[in-house]
Length: 153
Image (cartoon, rainbow, N blue to C red; front, top):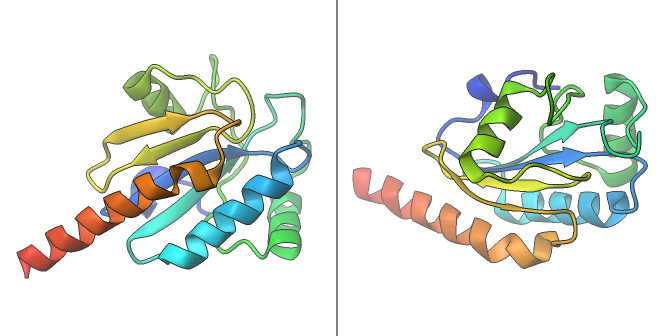
């Protein structure tokens, strides 16, 4: 597991997601997130998954149990961070930043925040928005990143 968002994924497009193992959205979202990660690859893009137990107590497991579950069940290859709080007094600083940047606070599991390579939060979507619905936004940011890198050569 990666434990610090600030040191792990600079200069990439990132999709930050608060995840849970026992949610109604678990199966569809983990499958779609892994498919997106596989299609785009990890050189310019990463899903960054943050387990959270704040919504319906749907992530009761330990960090090791969570990681084992997602790797075995969904063959997840994207980074899994340690379990955190995403809102309230004890919220992780990364999520405080995401909430302050968008004005949108997670109200359930599988909220998604899209971040450009400069660390700017581009958009946020709630649990009901599928990964397929936001795929074009991710691909466009990755395309812009690749073009920018080519121009810098």
